[in-house]
Image (cartoon, rainbow, N blue to C red; front, side, top):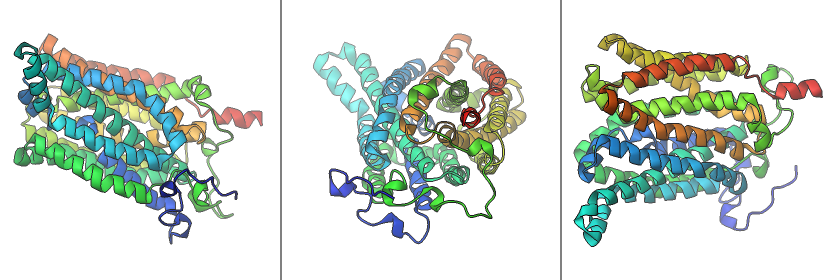
Length: 453
């Protein structure tokens, strides 16, 4: 195997400060741990990580729910416009550099948000008190842009792409292992962050998270992250399968690498991407307003936040099941199951019974979220290869970010106009059911390549 080219600086060389090819276990499994840490560290930049901060931030800045939702919309939309370029940077720089850069930038971004009321007050004091609201909106929008771009976007994408590049036959299993830990981390985060906010205050909680990102996550990413096995003198999965191994399902076989333009010209890319993007829209809208939604269906804040933990159990089981099933069947059928679970999630709050609503929310969001986590981590490398994975997943993540931008605003607008979130949940029921139809045609484009060989 030809050795990889030397990076311009020794500190980024894949064999520094140690050689991954001398690891006692296949180094890809070490990277599943780093991937898990990277995705978990993105929580402050995810909507689920904002749930405990929304109301305190509104009070500190003097903004209404519609205004804070609009700021989140604009900040997230702008980040979504830039994420495709970030995906290409991952292809160029590699996961290691991007993870370190994203962790450092994310820490700085949280620091800006932690001081957003102070910054806006200073600016308003210099320009005149009548502009205080405008400066508050501007500063918080900039803060939202920064945490969404670096957290939900670059840190998450670099982490997930890395594990996808290190595995082929065991990609579903590796993504599933990562998904188990991150499912519990994401599910527990609203309640944990709520406790921290109550004890430390929203400002010091964000500053503490910033310190963890800068000191811990950036350091671990530099020490252990590596972009791909070939640069370390290794092979995917640790080497070719032995003769006794189960043969690959035809849906797993990669015949060639697609360019970004070729991937975007295919129906399967958009069926999966739009299904994933819709969930991003719906779940971020729900999560951003979850305390208010909980009150509308009869739950106290602590009770509705606790449902995330219950859903995590179903998410873990679904994630592991998806990792096993994806190696044995066409993933388009798992996409259909995912969309049906999203519809079940949205149906719950429409029924008017608190206990039944909670049951459907937990089952639908848990299983659907677990399938989303695994499928979104395996499908693009399986369908389009690894050579342009950053550029291709950059478009997927941009779509997911656009969805997450619209979700909180649409939920907030529905409540402001109709005094209810019912319209948002009706759309959440109808759209995933509709997406099941094109999903039937979302076959792996590699199969067409096999026929042409």
